[in-house]
Image 1 (cartoon, rainbow, N blue to C red):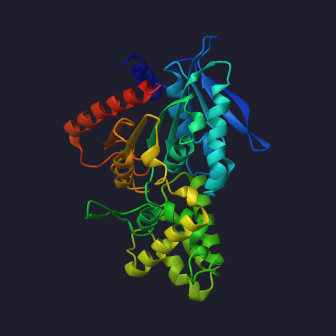
Image 2 (image 1 turned 90 degrees about the horizontal axis):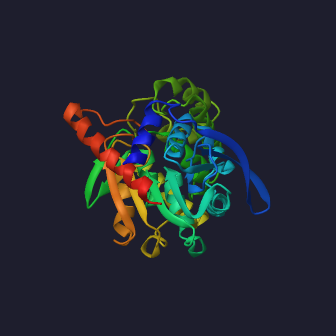
Image 3 (image 1 turned 135 degrees about the horizontal axis):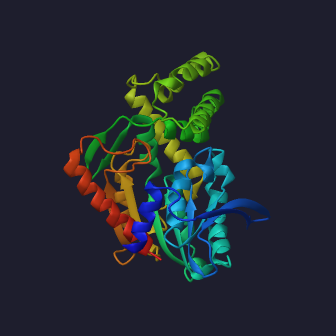
Length: 364
């Protein structure tokens, strides 16, 4: 609990510890990429963490991520946040991102301040699942001692349905919530034109990409009404017959879907296309054979990726691999804290969150 206390102190009172950020480079397949390293002063060797950002324009420099990694470094660890340029440009690009993550892990293990046999990996959102896939490489086993996956997905087709309709399910129990359209903007920009019958909808895909990039620049939740003028402006750039599909992804804030069945059809088509074009998006083949101790966490109020996806991941990991699975009412990566908790609920969730944080830190 000592290290957890240090994390919380730095998180809520930034500057409590003299965490230093330095810029470095790491190598992947013929090119050097940027990375930031956070650590406390001193020459002793410490455990290391690679922390992955998700699909967001600020990338490793996102203020929320930097706050987290500074706090993690305050626990007396060396923390590296690698830049993954494809993710920063909102490109899924699993074929290159998997070796990128592996290169970052190897690079940190060779850092002079890191005890090379005590390295862990933390991934958020899209980076959570891609981190698991990357960490399945048997060559990393001597180095990688733990993985924490926060807010990841298990099933691409279900993910596409959620980001398009807000629907998800578990054990045949259906749910539907007001979803954040940001995920639909990204996946639509990537895979819409790979859906049979929509191959020429490049105008819609381009408009969705522009909306997603704008959301990354503003750092305002994509369901906010402030995006409505942008949606209307971009709608004018789209061919008339294509606007019906565009409206399924970018209707005005608060307006319900006007054709739920069509939205589902397109969502499943995008999921099939995504797996056909980029099969490494599917963690399924890796989960039953995964050998690194793994902690799964998710915010119950998440509106980008539903918490049921993390429960699916946890169920497919072997019992001796799954260190913990926690669904928390706090810190969803979209939507914040669950509403209606009340003082006792906040206290309960706070206690569970501290235990979760302690488990993450103890992974390595």
